[in-house]
Length: 143
Image (cartoon, rainbow, N blue to C red; front, side, top):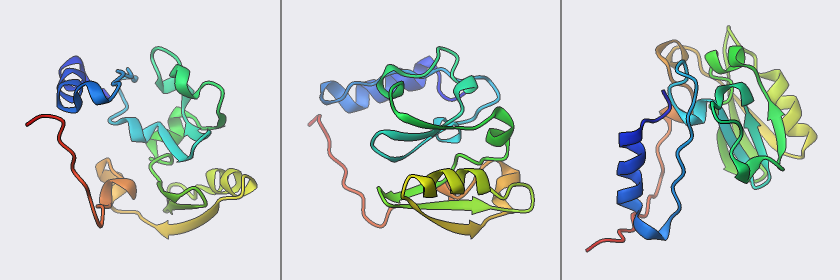
């Protein structure tokens, strides 16, 4: 699912010419891009390659990749929250301890903050889905 042509066109129209919008097609079982891709910092991604129908986007092919499986995706393992380039909030629960991702991030010098998060996962969302920005700046390119 991820996105569809209508969503791609809508975002492209809203953002205008100030941004390059690329459609990323995902396997049907994946709800959103943040279920299969997380960017803890520039040059590093947690990713499920098999979820990308057209292969990895060119922009991240040369990055340091922490690879996970579609089974991990089903447990919403990738849906963590990058705070900044040195801190990452990662959920765990009775179905997924997320130790693999934690270990891989720590090997790369990122401090992982573990948060127990169980109930929401069963409904198709995880930690990232349950957060809101403290401050959001909205910039319009159209009058």
